[in-house]
Length: 328
Image 1 (tube, rainbow, N blue to C red):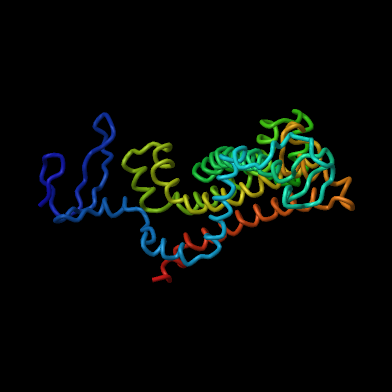
Image 2 (image 1 turned 135 degrees about the horizontal axis):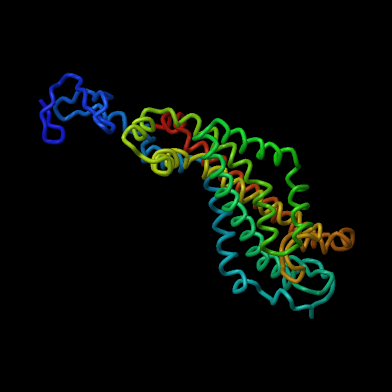
C-alpha cells in the first residue's frame, strides 16, 4: 500500500477523477510500490556521460588543448592589448614600409606605424565582433529553431521557409547587402554577421528538439502540467548544450573571418580603428615591396580560425556519448 494525497492506494493501477464539473473523465496512475515510483522513472532524463570520463577525454584531445591556447592568447590580447603593445598603434613617426627588424618585429606600414602594435590592439575589435555576432546568432537562431522543432506544423513550416530563404544567399553576399543598406560601423557589422549565420543555429537546434520532444521525460513533464516554456527551458535546452557549444565555437571563428572580409572590402568598422582586416586592406597595394603588411595579418586570421575549429572539433569528440563511453 502507498499513500497519495493522504489516501491509501493499492499496488494496482488506480483511476482518479480529473477535469471539472465532475465529468466522468479519469486518469490512470501507474502503480506505486515501495520506494520506487514509475513516474519518477519517466521524468528521469537521459543519463549523461560520466564527468570523470569526459574530462579524461578532454585531456586526451590535443585539438582542444591547441584551441585553448589560441583562445587564451586572444583573451589576453583583447583585455591587455593596449598595455602589451610596444608602441602607440597610431604613432606614424617611424620609417615608412620598414621591413621586420628587432625594433619592429613585424615591420611598419605605409604610414610608418608599427604593425605589431596595430595587430595586438586590433585583436580586441576582431575578437569582440566575432564573439558578439556568434552570441546574437545563437540567441536568434536558437529561439527560432526551438520554436520550430517543439511546435511543428505551421509554425515549423513558416520558420523553416524563412530559414531556407536566407540559406539561398551566400554568407558574405548577405552580410555585404545588410551593411550596404544600414551603413558600415561596429554595431552594424555585428548585426550583419549574426543575421548571416543564425540559420545554422536554427537548423541544428530544430533537429535536436525533434529528437527530444517525444522522449518519455518530455512527455511526462507535459502530462504533469508543465508549460511549454518550462519544458523547453528545463528539459530540452539542458540536453542540447553539447551541439550548441560546439557550433558556437565555430561561429566565433567564422565571425572573425567575416569581419576581416567586410573590413577588407571597406564595409567594416571605422577606418581609424585598427583591425586585422584593415591591415590586409592597407597592404594590398604594397604586396610586392612590403609583403609583411598583408602576410602577418592574414596569418593571424588563419591561425585564429584554425584554433577555433580545432577547439570545436575536439570538444565535439569529447562530448560525443559514444566516444566518452569508449574512453574508460
